[in-house]
Image (tube, rainbow, N blue to C red; front, side, top):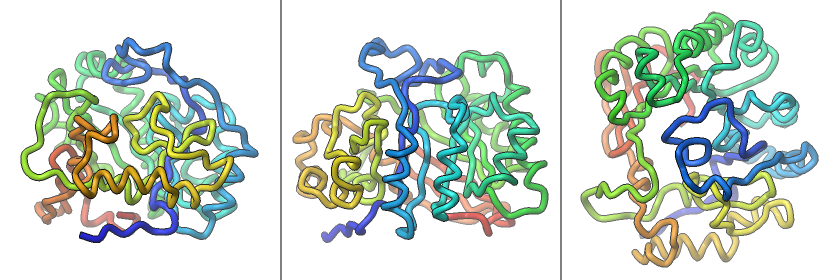
Length: 315
C-alpha cells in the first residue's frame, strides 16, 4: 500500500514553552505523578526562532498548535507568538485548562486575534471528581471560561469552541452526563480514553502504520522534531527544524526511516512505537449522524460535532 506524504505536515504542534503549568494533573506525563521529573525539558522558544518556523510554513495550509504539554496562557507573551501567526494567516488551534480565561481574556482570544479553534479540558461534572483527575476543585472557574468564550464570540462563526473529557476510572461515571450537558452549548466535544505509554491494553486487529507519521510533526523549544506527542522528554529527534527546515526534516532520511519501519511492520525498530497502542486513536473507523450530531469514533477517541455548528469545522 502506498502512503502519501505531503511536502509539509498538516499539523504542527510547537512547544513555545515547556516544563511549566498551573496544574499538576495526576495523569500528565510531565507535571503529574511521573517519577521522571528530572528528564523534563524546560525553557522557551525565542520569538526569532518561532518566526523562522512560521515564515517557512506560511502559505502551506498548516495548522499550528502553539503549545506542548503545558498551559499556553501561563506564558506572559503568548499572544506575541499568536500575532506572528496571524500576520502570516496561519491557522491556530489552542488547548487550555481554562483557569486563566476570564471575560477580558476571552474577548482577547476571540476578538483581538484570529484563532481557528479552542478546546477547554474540563474532564468532570463535579468538583470532587475534578480534584481526582486534574488536582483542582475549581470546576466553576473552568466552566465559566467556556461560557466567557461563547459570550465573546456571540454570533460569529469562529473560533470553534469545544470541551474535552479524558475518561479514566475516577470520572467515567460522569461521561454521559458531561456529553448531555455540554452539547447544549459548545460546537464539539472531544472524549478521549486515557492512554499512558506502557499501558497493557491491547487493540485488536492488524496494526497499520501510525497516521501521525504522515500528517503531524512535533517541535520542541530547541527546534528538535519529535515523531510523537508521547515523546514528552525529547528522545526521538528526527532532526532540527531551526538548523535545517521543517520541510527538510519532514521529508528527511530519519523521518522516512521511521515511516518505513511502520510500513513493513517492524515497529520494534522504533523504541517509542514498539509497545504503543495509541496509534488507534487516530484511525476513525466509525462516522455517522445521530440526534443532530456528526459522531466520529476511533478506538480511543470520539468527537461529537453539532451539525448546526459545522461552518467552523476543519478536519
